Length: 156
Ligand code: NI
Image (tube, rainbow, N blue to C red):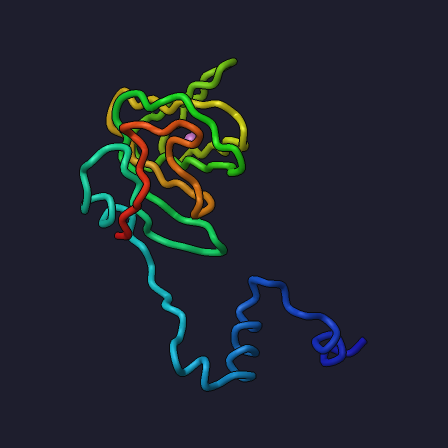
C-alpha cells in the first residue's frame, strides 16, 4: 500500500490534531467564529489564588470531565460515589486515604484512582494540594450531604 492510500484508508485517532485541521477545512466559518482556547495552566499560580480547604476549584474541562484543584487539611467525611471514579494526584504534602480495609499514603507526584462505589475518607494531617480529575457531575462528598459538600464550584 502506498503512503497516500494508507492515509486515505486510516482515519487519524481521536487525539490526532489533524482531525481538528480537517474539521476547520470543512467548516471554515465555524472555525473563524470561535477558535478553541489553547492555554496552559500553571498549578502553582492557581493554588496561590485560594486558601480555603475542601473547596475544589475548576481549572479545566474536557470530555465532560473537570480538572480541579483543592487544598485539604484535616479529616474529610467517609463517603462513596455512586457512579463516578475519582482521581487524586498529590501536588504538595502527604495525603492519607482511608478505606474500610486499608490505608493508602500518597506523596507528591503520586496518584490514586478510587473506583465508584468504594467508600473512602481523605485525611490530611498537614495541608495538602491535590489535583482531581472526575466527571463534572461529581460531588466532593459523594453520597453524603453535609457542611463539607461543595455544590457550586468556582472556576479559576
Ligand atoms: Ni470522594
